[in-house]
Amino acid sequence: MSDNSVLIVAAHPDDEVLGCGGTIARHRSAGDRVTVLIMADGISSRGASAGTALAERQRAARLANERLGVEDLTLLAYPDNRMDSVALLDVIQDIERVIERCQPAVVYTHHSGDVNIDHSRTHHAVIAACRPQPGHGVRTLLFFETPSSTEWRPPGSLPPFAPNWFTDISATLSVKLEAMAAYAAELRDFPHPRSHSAVEHLARWRGASVGLPAAEAFELGRLIK
Image 1 (cartoon, one colour):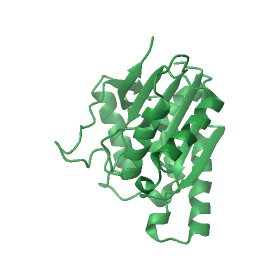
Image 2: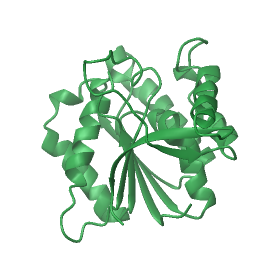
Image 3: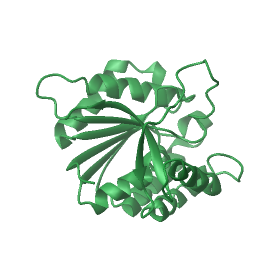
Image 4: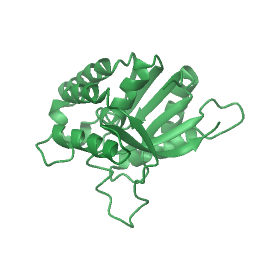
């Protein structure tokens, strides 16, 4: 598995691990350059003390990405659960700047049907930033699922997540779970989908559905060969 330069665009700190942490670790083990861009602060909607809570969440993000092997992490601070209050063009341009800097061949981001508005907003901004103009370097565009958002969308509300791309994370599931532990404050008790057990169960189920011990599932948005 080698795609040279890879970009993950996630709405909140922890989405990158939930959605594709095992895949990130696999890219890094293959020697790929991985850039992670996180758009929103992840805490301001909770009425928490901005300074302390934000510092703690960013500290967790740095630790989680260090455990995944990521050396290029950018943390923006869009308002949590309020990215629809920001001009979409501003979000697109922030993503474009990172794309220009890291020149990714592969981009991962959220599925469009997630319940969380920041996930949806990030998805649409990535689509615009990765439009296939002549000379644009993004060859593969993949959408990940985020436990406690993707599966909570009722049928018929928006297009459901229907994975058609699976990455074997049998060798990196433990790394994903270790990285997720850095976000301990975001984890809940089982059977909440954002619990340690549920995250592992999902990886096992996605793997079993394609004959693997563990996998992460994606929807393919675009593949240029």
